[in-house]
Length: 536
Image 1 (tube, rainbow, N blue to C red):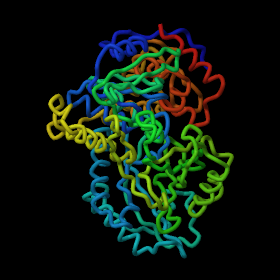
Image 2: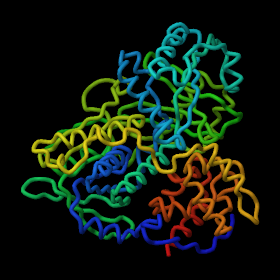
Image 3: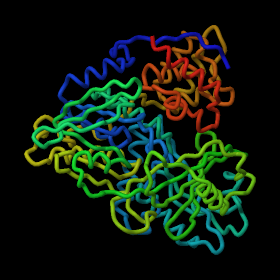
Image 4: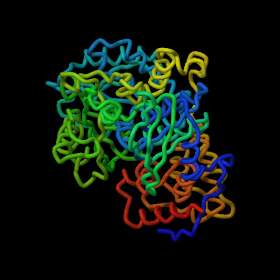
């Protein structure tokens, strides 16, 4: 590992692009009265803060952990229409999902999302026949206006050329359709940046210790900065509870007698090294309702997911041995044994889906977004899915505009007057960015490695040029963090100065891919912690 010299924060004034200090942010949060305080830095809270700031409201966003630190960075990494929803006749829902998927991947964040071809294998004795699945993927593609091609059926031999580890025993045919994938943590982080660009004030690692009340109404929150123990507060005209699996915990702070409003479903995933290249993903039906995915993602293979009710502490969710066995067993329906060796597993993670309260099988439950108002006037939002994160933000804003008495309506621009497809920061063609990074390498010095250029282009878009300049100015930051990963040390310094990274896990798990690759070694962690400490 390279020996890093001290690299203090480059520029300390927000106008220069770097972040204010935590003390400055706490002071700003404490002094002002905000129109909206969003508690919860998952994608629902982030999207709402982004849209609220766009509408002209004075917005604050806080989270007890890191942005997207829980479920929002533990998804299946997909932007998708929801093929399985066609079985329940939810045609309008699938069409709406497709609209949002294509908007994000084509116009809002083409630098952070990429198209992915899916193969749906049809095995002898399986839950669905080739004719039914062929008709299903055709209808699915039709609902996206055939923007990803026409869903169709191909032969097993053709499919195996793209997915060499595909199991062909008793394989009758393969249905084909298109969706998109992303790095969810990076997408969330860019949305935080968009919210800040629009005027929001944000702080992670700031836990709510209590709610503030004025004449029985919730008018803010008391918080504690977990990095140094500093206690402070935020005053707001309206508070939005977007804490995901913890939504009922905060509702009980408002009203100790509040009845449970949600239930939780755990989704576990495994990350494996790939034995051979994959040019398509697999979506294998397990039964009438469930599909198991095998996704080429970040040069690895992502397997999952499980779907079972979870009743424990959300902070304790983890992948169990039973989860691992289930994922590997279900993957074995369509994947050869050599790709499913436990020795290839580099990482596992689990997240919690927030579902509306009520009975029934969680695998059949709709991923609905529920917005409720508590006794003290606090709004709580829960549920939904990654694909529709922009739509959820707009939905919450419309709810704010329609509140009794319209307390915020006169101060906010209506959603229908705002840009429908405002892009996220860094929007650019990632192929063009990667090409520029390779051509405009440091001089003198070695050119940037192709895998690093591609990684920067698809995780930062045009902001990758800022990282390249940082590496040029500080040659030690141009070195790889780990020889087996594309990331360079400049990304760590950039995460510290521009992306709210406070801990090694913030960097290794969510701002880079080192943890999921199984490369967050003690030496790497020590180097990251040293660089984070050099804040200047």
